[in-house]
Length: 388
Image (cartoon, rainbow, N blue to C red; front, top):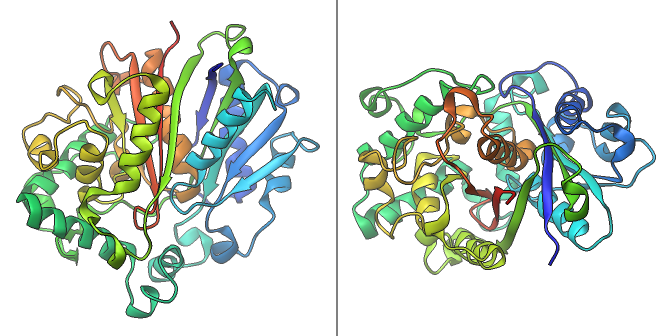
């Protein structure tokens, strides 16, 4: 099957922004186009992700609005919503459209504003986020996403002996990586003691086990295999897997294994013709420290039960044998819901090109991105590699 390639990548700083969603996305879109050496007229379609703007900012029908601000009015625009996996799903569909010959060049990305600049405080945004949980069986009980991932992680602790200190090492590692990323929401390092001394949010998570609410946007230019060599630095997309899991969480037979991630990873690896052993690094959805532990095992980067020890012994650090989240991950880089999936693709692109600056990994030729939505009920896994 002909492969698609990413030829341009752009993103804003993640943090707090006081400009409208349309302008925020345009900043990332123009960054991706400039990086590709392309013009808006070169793009045939826009695949766009936003999850929460209707509830958070009373603005819907964003497709033509962001296209207008990005200088692309007139082309087809498709908006995606899949909770935190929103723009990864947009990316998956853009890749499929290019590989099928429907379009030769697609701009794909996402945007979200989740901070009080929306006019909603943390408690209000937490309720908005909780709309991704089950309306009948979870929301009436007051289950929000710190609680969801706390339940998944507590089960993992029961099954494998994972400890709070091991979770704290995930936070320390990702803050260390984020300190090297000029676009990260949090650019400071922390210690294990600081993490463990923080207030409890949802047992076993303390404050610094949790990613922040962030504003931001990200975008990439995806082109056909035939067009890729006409650009300076194409990076091949060799596999994209997409799977769903049971909702509500109480009905998952093995909640701590995040089955959708395993299914999506299997599909992505099969398409790419590789295994987890062939991957040089990963960007995973660490909305909470426990989520990174579960993801590292679901992707096959470490054995089941080894996610916690791998973090504690440094295996998943930048200089470890299975580097995870060199960007700082959601934990330090930030988590603007609709932008997170393609922000991971931006990181893969920059690392594989050797353009990641102070956080650059040596000899990175192949990487995997893992983006989940809701209570691990939707997962998209993408494999990218240096064009050979």
